[in-house]
Image 1 (tube, one colour):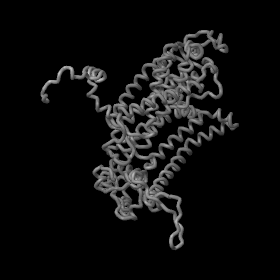
Image 2 (image 1 turned 180 degrees about the horizontal axis):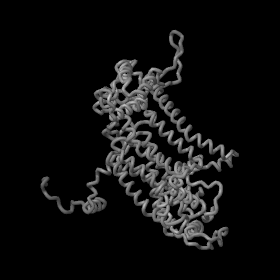
Image 3 (image 1 turned 90 degrees about the vertical axis):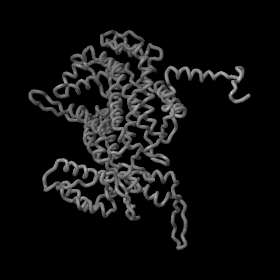
Image 4 (image 1 turned 120 degrees about the horizontal axis):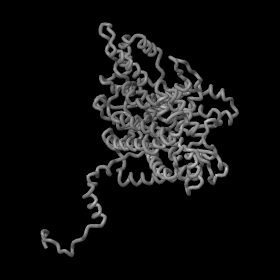
Length: 600
């Protein structure tokens, strides 16, 4: 039989059942056109799991929250409790608090689901904070991911607000106290504070509508916005491709890792069940938010040791540390004791973090695309600022527990409060200096290791009697990781003003130049007195000292390119000793650096 003959019908075999189902589905949904998604490559690193933890915790939140809506009554109408919990029988309370106690003691599995929901919320917010910190320290927020950074930061703010709103729904004494503080903070906002308070609470506090309004925010409005932003956030991650750390075969134009399907999908599925299992274990053995011990909210009751959940602890500490300052203006009382710690300080903190990608790009003049991540030690200034920010948060967090610390450690409450007031200014500054010096020391250590090899612990005696330690050369992969760092340099000096005529644009350029030289200069050690005098001359006279600075840079073997993207590589051995303060021993030709290619 020739190859063109039709085989007999008995020789034909039917397509497998799975293939027929796949063809049927593809004919109606066109899923085969999305094959590029299943082959999307994702790199591997342990720090990438923080985002997955937040995502999987959010899934658990949605499932448990849907279950709780079947039993929770968001009503503030008064009732008398006659349930199974004996200490509260005969106590007048709201329907919201009564239904919460009912879920905890009379609904099968209700307490477990409540605690699983609460632990998932705390875990999600904590994972989002670590996820944001990881992006900040590795520089993944740079072009083209600035907008995705804003989406992620907005998600963090919304999830924190969602946690506070959900924390307030049971209407117990602790959450009611938090609502009272929120009402005071809202009223402290000038001009619009009273209107915002009426909108949120539906009248004078506590009113009869606040739980119902917060319930709508908690189960509808905020979750819908979070889901929408999360979808856009993940789409942009797919579109821009995932960032990765520097290493062999990893460039700005590729991604080294495993495909989404089946490798990454299988691992992600397993990781989801691990997260769900750990959260379930916590919900089963670790009690959290026992509202029945607090009792229903009453405006005339408050007790020592009333702290909110950890993510709102910094706000509580700021309020406790701030002195009770106020003054009258035009017949209105401006309460600085609340306005500064609860409105101005959090707003400034959020604004700096949200706008950091644009601030760093403005200072460094770096407008290139970045798909390779930096290690924190390679950018001492950025890393020091991030750790200083975390130190400020922790100081305020500890200030929110000043009464508990005073009781447990037998200390003076006033002394703890004053320590927090001083620590707000001293601890972040000290943390900044120490972190920067540690990063520079790690850079210098890696440079020595790269030049001389790692210590082996073996001692050898030379023919002249001298004892030396044997060093071993690093493996090629480690050497590549240390050599592949991009070198940053200060911006080029701006052109002097023409005929002494002030020029605002050139003055801004001079300011950027001074900031860039200080933050991303090429001095790995402490500046010399001559360099300090030149910097002071710049601060006093923007036109003076440019020639001296350029001459000094030229004498050190560095020449900034016209676009401010990096210095030319030194040619001599002595010149190669100088290491960028933010990138370490970056090496490569000037032609490669100007073309935007990675040095190898």
